[in-house]
Length: 247
Image (cartoon, rainbow, N blue to C red; front, side, top):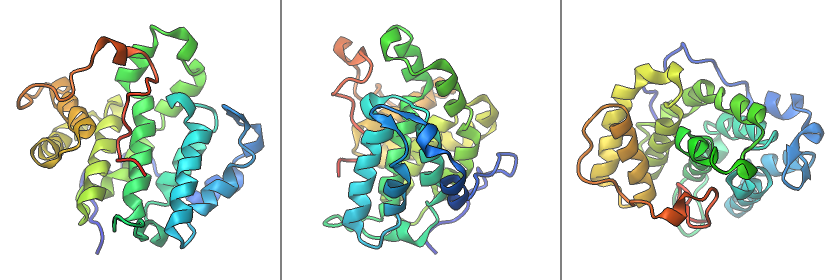
């Protein structure tokens, strides 16, 4: 058994459509991306299910450039995220990453968490000061409304047997739980956030956990990790770390 379903994944959250449906029924060529349309995305997405982990990692890197360039949300971001969330339970997600012996599932969740962070309350509020960096409001709002559905896909991995998978699943869930419909999960998630602060040495993850505890009215232990400098408040700074260590 590689993971257990958490009670935090309540049936009130809408269910994610099967990844095959997302792939087949999305008009990829009509979707805006930073470098043209999304017509090439199906090929990249299907490579995530290849048995060769090097192919999977390269595909995930390419996907990040195609739909997450400069940490922005594009029209193609939403269906790409739905596809990746939909394959978390696929056997290919248990392929071990080369040189690290970590399931590809951890990298998939890390990419999802990083993308969720780009549409988080903090980043959206920050970017309001830099109108030139804002995604179109309708595109961003539509993406943010997917959070309850995406939470249901992520929540089963909050107690995964693999430490790396478990940690990035918690980070993804903490960001998604900013959605008002997920308020009822926050006390439960606060316990997971405290465990991140107790056990993780990865400072960006620790900061997400600390800020969730603080924002939700709990008393976080110690000072905020990685206090931000003024230059870090520019949107899409090169200094912002991804939520899963580099490939």
